Length: 440
Ligand code: HEM
Image (cartoon, rainbow, N blue to C red; front, side, top):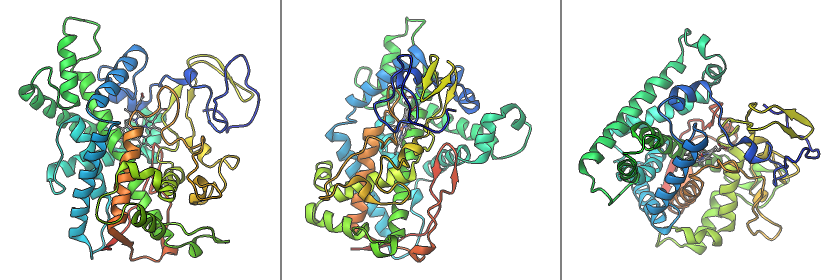
């Protein structure tokens, strides 16, 4: 792991990243992924997907996946409409519980998972579907274990921890169950699809497998399909739903400004966002993507949520593909790099108020939205998150639709709310909490 970022000249032609706060060297030198204990078990041998593969396999799968997702509407208006439909379904479900306090995580996760499932499997699942709930719990259990000390220790001392009882053993049994679900879905698609008329990602991949049948070096085979589907399902669900779940808790913590800041800064939060939504969108239609530019304050709060929680604080591990000088340090080819995204997010040279939750970090003096190059929850470079555009749409549409419809309340006083993550490791896991919704 490189030392904490320090300023210093770049050397030997290895360029500094264009972002001053970037906590790692120029991206082409770190584009490869190392073998970590859990990545090895998950997919470094035969079951390769995108997240842990390298070289030609990674390039082929990534290019194909990005192209297929585009064909299926990701990045266009049609996926935004799909998210709006799901947001409306979520509101309906939440309306049934209004008046009673509950933890909204499983509803949010179901809504977010339905978006990626409709693209990957061509299906969405009811909020009370018991089998789907079990599946989502498996995804979440793995996110939690990988974000705990057990997950981190397993990565460092796998052979030793193999002999020690603990929750880390569940990672693989959970993964096997998820894999069985995905394989069953693929089988259904094999039986029912119309070749060359793909309706979802699995159909696209199966068409590609047909085309590459005669090629012994093809990267399109059943294991890569299962693993790539798992990458999209896991990547598309846990990070996005954690961000929305954590975001609502932050809004509960700071209901108005005087309690949050000393000296007070412009009023943050639900009321101000709701004022903006009422003025720009009104209450007669759902928020849509085109509203984003006209909601600068809301947009700033959403960016601030992502910056403040840094849901993947260390990004994903990479390895150096060549010897590198970085900020006065010599790093050998093959060195593992953990890009501390959170260090960019907390950099006082980049943000006005890095330690606090403060939307002013993304607003200029006139209250207009102001982006910041040090904002990098999706990382940077060649291996930047391939679902970044989709995730940004989801976070915006789900949060604005919830706030348009409900006033957020909680049984706790704001000062009693603890924003510390439930656990930290691969991810910052949002803590459980009780939410009370009142229809506005
Ligand atoms: C708030 C939501 C999300 C955050 C913060 C996030 C963050 C990240 C980060 C930090 C990486 C590592 C990039 C690197 O290796 O340097 C990544 C990779 C990835 N993400 Fe996301 N992600 C989010 C949502 C999604 C969604 C919705 C999808 C699915 C469509 C997705 C699919 C992936 C995949 C497949 C990769 C591996 C890319 C590669 O290695 O080429 N992510 N994500």
